[in-house]
Every structure is written in structure tokens, then in C-alpha cells.
Length: 318
Image 1 (cartoon, rainbow, N blue to C red):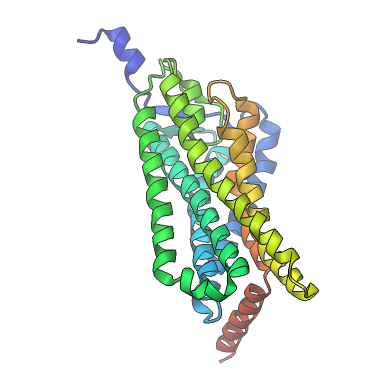
Image 2 (image 1 turned 45 degrees about the vertical axis):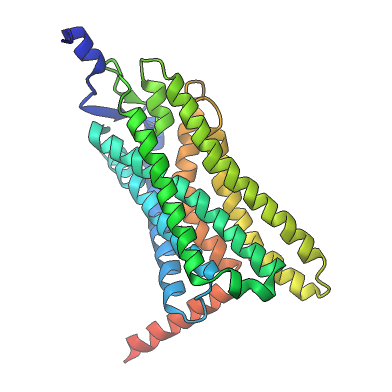
């Protein structure tokens, strides 16, 4: 049987204290306003993309199927973390329960890895559309797109499951203060008082697989796309092709660069002070910007949005 001291070391804490910017109280109100505004914009922007791409008959290609899933992921991504952050910044209580923390980092990592695979599927779609246009409908058919989306969601869930199983076994020796805005695996590993070599290695291997492999496929796809686009004789055709792909490349950069910094270094050695602000960036800023990037640089999406607004206006006038 465990002694009282052993029980203290291994029993999980009831709550965690999310430090956030509590050490900089002057920053809480401005950050609260920015987070609230960004969350509202993220919700409105991503819901708009889902509705427009679903309702407009001209936006039923595979690219918009993937885009709907990306927007849904971003909706869930922000909702997993931002309400908790707003509650902590708006009140004196900065805590989250142990079970709530576990659910938060489980869902957060599930969605993050799923988004990596969805972005790779979108790059594949653009490669086939530009490099093999005559075979596009034959290759990127509906069942294949649904299978790619299913693989994305299931593989993300599998990664999250492994991370949760390993992380819930870590002892914290009574330590409760997480120097972060929300719960995520690297911060939990950093807080643990046990040997985290297995957790560090597993996280590094899984992140390398879910980040570097999709990123390599994306870069390879765009290498072929760039070569094909440069062969297009029409400047209008080249401009359209680059315009279609540039939105996706911007989104890929905003998502992958912070993820590479955060996860492709040992969690036990990364800077929590820098890490928590980078986490804030990819958990709220990236999902907020994505709808505007895709809408402002996509003529089909802008046209569909105008048609939807015209229909709503006509209904309101009746």
C-alpha cells in the first residue's frame, strides 16, 4: 500500500491554476478585449464560410468540402480554449479542474493533428486541380474526399488518445500552477515532477509524424504546382492559379510555423514564457484570420457571399 507521502506525490491535483498574464495585471483587460473580439470574429467568419460553401451550388467542389471541415475545426479549436481564457481573465478565479484540463488538452491536440492532415488534403486537391486538370473529377471524387476527411479525424483522435493516456499518468507532486493560458501537453509535461523521457519521446515522434510528414507533402505538392503554373502561357491563368494557392499557403504558414516552434523541441526544455504567447497565437489569431484570408483572396467565395447576402436582403424586405 502507498504511504501518505506517496499518495500525495501520485494523486492528481483537484485543480490547476492557469497563470496566463496574472503576473502582468495591466495586460489582462487589453488582452481580454482582444480575445473577445477575435473570438467573435472567428465564430462569425468560420460559420459564414460553412454556410456559404454549403448553401451555394457553385461551391460544391472538393476544395470547399475540405474548407468547410477546416472552418469547423477552427470553430471547435477556439471554443475549446477561448471561453476558459476569457473567464479566467474576467474574474479573480484562475483555475480549471483536473478533469476539465484533461478534456481541454485532449480535444485541443485532437483538433490540431486533424487540421494538419486536412491542410495536406487541401494541398493534394490543389495539385490535382492544377497539374492534372483533365483527371480532376476522376481523381478527387466525393468518396475519396470523405475518406481523406475521415482519416484526418481518426488519426487526430488516435494521436490525442496516446497523449492523454501517457499524460494522465504523470505525477505533479502537489504542483498546480501552469504557466500558460490553457492546458496543453507540453505544459503538463513541464509541470510534472517525474522522469518524462517517454512522454518527451512519444510527443516528438507523433508531432514529427503529424507535422513534418503533412508539411513535406504540402511543400512537395506546391513544388509541382509552381512548376506547372510557370508553364502556363496566359498571364491571367497564372494569376488565377497563384491566387487560388496563395490563400492556402498563407494559412499553412500561420498554422505550421508556431506548431513547429512549440512541438519540435523537447517539452522539458522549451521556454514557457514564449510558448504560452505562441500558443495564444495559433489557438485564436490563426482561426480568426483564416476566414478572411480565404474570403478576400477567393473570387468564387466572394461571389457566393454576395449572392447569399442578396438572398437574405430579399427575404428581409418581404
